[in-house]
Amino acid sequence: MSTKQSAALEADETAQKRAQAEQFSFDVDAPGMVDVTNESHENPADHQYTVSIDDMTEDAMACTCPHHVHRSAFCKHMAAVATATDDGTLEAFPSEENEDERVSGPYKGYDKYGNVDHTDWTCADCGAAATRKGALTDCC
Image 1 (tube, rainbow, N blue to C red):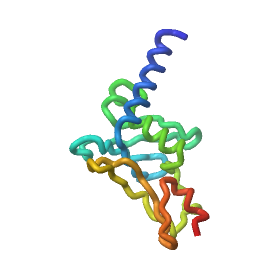
Image 2: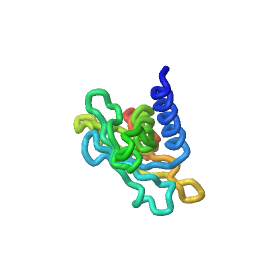
Image 3: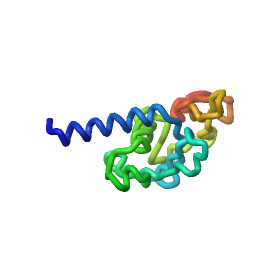
Image 4: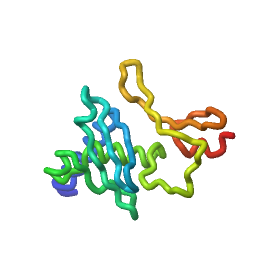
């Protein structure tokens, strides 16, 4: 493995670690365009960026944050989106045919310090809540 490849791999791992250590919220404005807010900061609105996702591979392609813009580097925002789409907590390409009108959300959940620590969805019919929207398809 070349030094350049190992440096890139190390940078990707650093971005993953930072994404895991910080709290993010997501909002899909358009298919493949995810607004990412870093809720770990005192003023989260000052730390909001957009991650674009490839509609064929569903890989994060770009971010509007300074780290990605100036270095073309995989950033913590891209890592956070990748993790959330992989584990099912974020649907970057929502389908209207899959919309279940009973299910609302995502809602932000907070820890005792006021930091966002999870998102969840709620079924209007039975009141069930889940951290993955898809988990509520058969709730009632």
